[in-house]
Length: 227
Image (cartoon, rainbow, N blue to C red; front, side):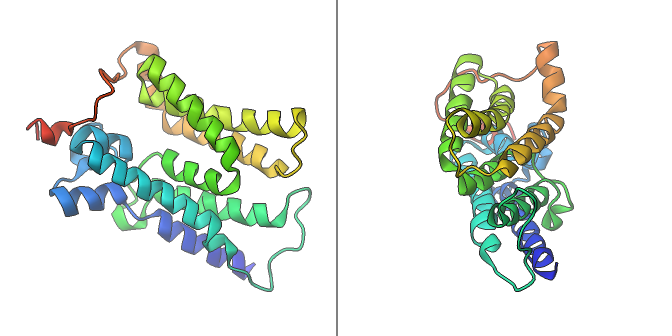
């Protein structure tokens, strides 16, 4: 399985690119891990550095997942498996590459293994695999965020909506192009994201989670002179 090992290693290294840290330090001279929630994710970049840095970080993080699941996963070797139970081999390889990228984002080799929660990178992976389903997930995220103003709740709800949407589209609407592995992957990914957000869930239950006050473009702590 040399080929799978190469794909996993390359995907992990791409996923390890710490966009929030490099953008913060390189463009603003700020390590976002020292401010806000101390998390190396895009949400904290929005909070600390504002919307421009946040959008750029989000695009890079999403791009890592897209690149791993589409470009790196397209590398072909002679020893790729010919069949894996009921899974499509191509989908399986793309999922493996995507998971490696998400792990790289959460535990980046280039940033002392202290990364973000993997939501944007996972979204990039899933956009590469099933874009229509992901637009449904994006809609769920926007609706929950607009009604609750909790970014964490929107992220958790969106992650849970993915396997649900896959199941409905595959088994209710008989869309055969959706491989069964996506449902399994979606369920595992949802569990991982719930675990990554366990402190947010606890704060939501306690009523202490940070809520967006408004939907105007965020200036960030740096823009308000709070750093």
